[in-house]
Figure (tube, rainbow, N blue to C red):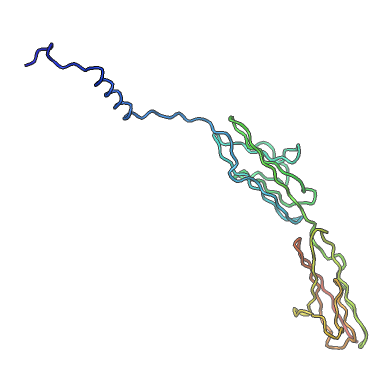
Length: 221
């Protein structure tokens, strides 16, 4: 048996190797830290018709979870503590406006903030005036062989184009080659009327900012 004096001792080199092995095998926990807010889905510009709904996205990331505030100019519209009628802060962080009015046009800013900082993004809402028939057609009674005119006018947003069509009993009315039936803007003119022209006529206006229609009856005596 070896005496204590003869036992091998740990030199400096083996000690360093043991410590290095320990460093490789010991997991040192990483302490969680805060994360600055970031916009993962920022709001985008939108164009809607008055009376409908508009929804802006504002999805964020960060730790702690960022608080969302929506502003228009210097006015707070929706946040955790503020809720203006028609403006709703969604759970996703987005903003819903319903119903939209023409006065809602403008820039909207989503502000996301937490203890680590603040980030914001701005988008524009454009609101079109709804297209409506302002002068609907009225019932007409004409003598056979004379001309009947059914008027139909509409008001609309000047930034959108509109188109008119007429139908009788669900069948599209088309202008004739000889000009007996013609259309100008929203008006329908039927010349040399006869009993075959009797019926209910519907004027329909279509556009990007809404559709509308009005009907009238034509009688030929």
